[in-house]
Length: 268
Image (cartoon, rainbow, N blue to C red):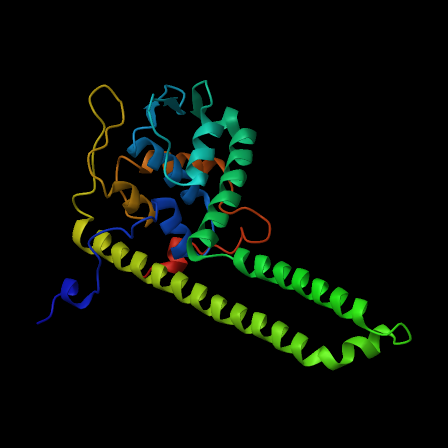
């Protein structure tokens, strides 16, 4: 009889260049508070922050000295926003600041997601280049044309050239968008296969405990991805649950409130 593990298509490594927060964004199709928590946990995992629970229920973040920066512009911005020079406590007293930081990180992470797949920057540059070339061409034709001819009469013979140029640019744009969407889908599929591996093959061992002194300890490289995929573990859950109890589930606004919950997205 085929086991559950044999029936599931899995990937044993995270997709290169896809952080845990970005992986969750691709899976749920948006940004939620767990995404924010996972981004903070990634900074701890990578050695940029250390965390310690306080007696009042908050969790204090302290920056650790590193010679390098986090991977990704969103992570770099988040580190600076959380702990520029001072410690920062995740708790009710920081509610307004947390809302502001979360919205700023969401905007940058969603932009990073589009940039990973390829955005429309090349199309815009090509369009501007076409406008410049056509302007130069029109000016050159107008200078050589007889003075008694109107602009319409001067340019009318050249309309097929303009149509071909604009049509070619539009066709290239459509091909580019198709490739971009295909790449986004491939990345989402790869992340989903890795989620299945975490859920099916590793859920039982992703449960690191607090040390005797109450400090958070991190040992498993997959733990933050597990938190991103909604798999319970004692190392990440205190941060996730604290932020989820403090902040609204999603951010209102275009591009923010499209996220699906774990209950909607995953079939347990």
